Amino acid sequence: MISTIINWLKRPIMLWAGVFVGVLGTSIFLFVFFNGVAMTNTMNFCVSCHSMTHPYEEYKKSFHFKNTVGIQAGCPDCHVPKEYPAKLIAKILAYKDVMHEILGTIDTKEQFEEHRLDMAKRVWAKMENRESRECRNCHDFNNMLIDEQGRRAQRKHKEAQNEGGHCIQCHKGVVHELPKGADF
Image (cartoon, rainbow, N blue to C red; front, side, top):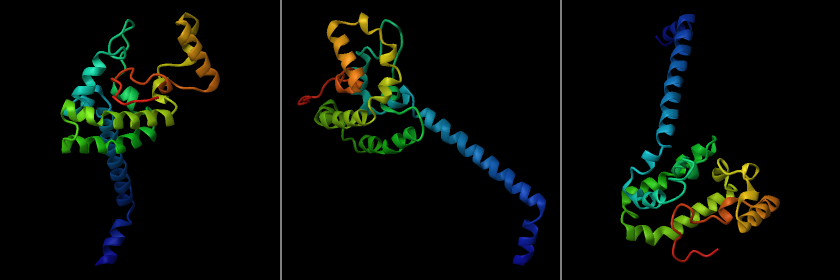
């Protein structure tokens, strides 16, 4: 009985059927996977959680939301790497944000403020480790008109460029309010 089944499966038509099913299954998986990643990489998805209403309100007051040139940087632009596998790792590690949403640990403004410094330090550390990679997707020393900046900005940007500095070293609190007790 088993040998009959094995012989039946060894037929060329079954091999091609297996290849077809494998390719079809892989294609469907990849389509769903990449569309799922893309869907979770939008501003609407990010602010759909109740716990994100407070940071979203801060963001709407920032230059990254509304500015003279009409370019908007959303949550994923700053908080999610663009390339794989870094993007996938960030998505996997975001489970903690889902857990906080489910557990309600930062639902209220008061709870959010209570955890703000710890959350900010974690984000700043990630940005430091990545040398402000997400910032540099838009901000590049080579594209800056440094001579048209204020004197202090000119000096600081030239120093950073020459010494390998990066954005987050100076630009904490650009989009979200600085937490109480932040020292740098």
